[in-house]
Length: 558
Image (cartoon, rainbow, N blue to C red; front, side, top):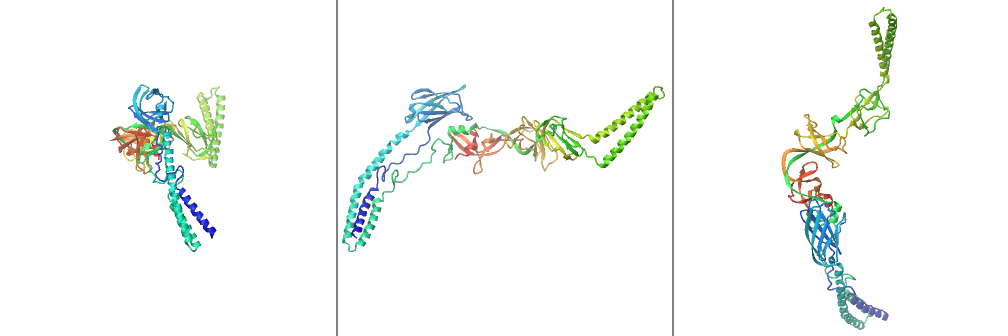
């Protein structure tokens, strides 16, 4: 019992001293602790613009990066001459092809407001752009204040420790007195243990943190753009630094409102020019055989009149019998005429017959022999299939030994430089409209009206257009979208199709370049204008800078 009582007493003493030490130690502040330093924000930057240039200056340490673009289309400008009036005097920026211009100086390390005058000369254009930089305190200066606050907190915690120790001793003395007065030491020991635990809780309750923690209320976190990274801000704008814009290849145009002719959109497909294509068909059924060099392959270039294949008509048994009968008749007639000619030739010198009879007999014999030879050739010579026009073999259905049916298409020849587009319209098209087409690969085609039909085809009217200019990459049968201008006019803003993107909620939007590194999405209502432009009827005004290239990448920024 004495041992248990002594152990409990020792535990109580250690508990009091341990609880008093939980308040604070070096590097901790459990009462008044300074708020943590805010997270580092974007690098110090400033921008300026004129009618010709847009400039962004970014300070990083003792170096100033200058990004220079054309104001109208956001195209980076290389090879310009930039002179900067700094607090240390005039400095010429170092030109780096494909990168920003650079200026170095120790004055960039001093916090405060710095006013610069930048003179830009690019070709025949010269502008003076004022730039005002607000340089914040460096990280080293902010960190110097942290040890002082930690030392103050540690000193305060150390000053409070003696008071806690005295209070703990008083509680322990009271408990010992109770234990001595009790008749049953076991009950006293239990009471002593219970109260010791309570003293631990009371003495250690302020200790909720260890090194590097604060026991006060956490400071609210500000939702601001941090770092030089492209990101979507809480208010909806998109911050895209100039280096990222160059990676995205962002380009812009300035909008203007005007009157445009309304267009209708028609489904269409590419067809060969009727005068620049042809079909190779077998006139009679027969077995196909290859010419010398073999059948032409797909894509092979052929000339008009080139033999592409041979067709050998099959001979039936009745045909063979009839042919032999005709051959026998011709052989008999040839023999009779031959004897007659021999007799006439012996009588001609004596002038027993006229000279005319002799010549007629010779001609008759010659004709019979030609008929006999033609009959022999018809049984042996196949029919040649020749190319009707010059071009490329677009389709081939020839196999050696294949039996071709009469009027079957064996080859199709197409001139790839002469292609047309056939569109289906549900209304009458004027005689000479302006038209264009766009393929599934994004290729824009300029079309010339050739004519429209009068007979309906699936409740529509076929309209033919010829492709003006290069038709490389197109093939017959390829589907395209045809845009035909009508006589109706509509007022609005014409922008490239690449400017319009569909947002996550399905709405059509464009991106306005509001400042040098900020973009705003604008919901718009659009309709097709021609092959490469859309007409904005509402949601956008004139004089705005709209992104024409890289809009899809901006829409993915989060």
